[in-house]
Structures are given as structure tokens and as C-alpha cells.
Length: 223
Image (cartoon, rainbow, N blue to C red; front, top):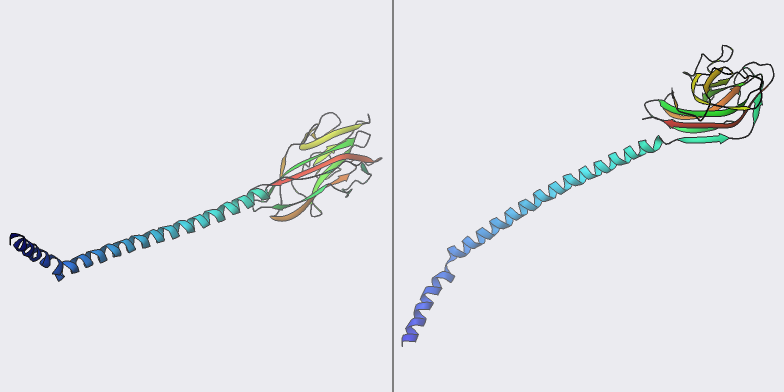
């Protein structure tokens, strides 16, 4: 009898808890609110991810552009060891060396040049040309008879090759301009774009023939 009454009492307490529509509605509304907050957070996270992806794409594009610019400043080089000669007092094409480089918007180019000039009575003169035109800004103090020589050796008549290279400076012994040794860079300015640079040669006397060998040209565009 006591057990039966206890069971009835428990049932009476349980029925309102499970049968209350208000309580179930509250639970559902709470769950819906949590779901909406979770959806809102996921959308915000998606927007942040999209912005990060766009920034990443932009960074990759900028890095690629920078790498392209850096790559375009690499040194291009050419050498011609053979011996060539001329008796012309104006610059002539004796087969280079020549290189092609793309000049950037600065228009600035670093140039290294050097050659062995036979130290006979004539010596020899070397100038830088771009697309067949004499590049401005080369030394004009070397010899009044030779226009804008990049390198010049007047010659002493002693014979034998003399290594003359950039940068241009007044050379005392023998006369002319250049550096007696390995080449260093000099800077010239041309228009932006692709250009073919080459060395051309002249006889500063002319009273015989100028001879050139081991000819070197290096060019590097500047940012």
C-alpha cells in the first residue's frame, strides 16, 4: 500500500515536468539562439578568411613583381678574346662584344668594359654604343681627336698589350683615360626599354693601326 502511494506521488511530480509546453518552447528557443550565434560567428570567420586570402594574393603578386624587377637587374656579360684592328678615326663595329638588356624606369645602367690594347704608336680608343648610337655621358677629355671615348690608350710605342678598363680616369703614362687593371662599373643613362649595348673601336692617331683583344662588356640595369 505504501509503495503504491509513493509511485503515484512520483508520477504526479513527473507529469508537469515533461508535459509543460512552456518549458519545451524555452529550450527550443534557447537552442535556436545558440545556433544563430554560432552561424554569425562562422560568417565573421569566413569574412576574415576571405580578407586574409585577398591580402595573401596581393602579397604574392607584389613579391612576384619585386622578384621580376630584381631578376631584370642581373648582369649580362659577353667576351671576345680574338684580336681585331682598325685604322679608322671614327668608331667602327669590329664584332662586339654586345649584350641585350632591359633598362628599367630609372634609365640607369652600370657598365663594365675592358680590353687589351696593343701599345704601338697608335694605341686605341673604345666607346659604348646602344642600338647603334654613341651613348652620351662618356669621357670627352681623353683625346680631342676622338669623341667621347669610354677607354683610350694613346700608346708609347714600346709594343705589347696593355689592359685598359673602366672606370675612366686620366692615365699618366702613355696618355688617355681608363684604369690599368680589372674593370669597375661606370653608370650611364639611356631610355627605358630593351637595348643592345656594344663596344666599338677607333684609331686615335690614325697613323698605323689599332689592335684590340680580350674584349669584355658587362651591363646591369639599375632599379
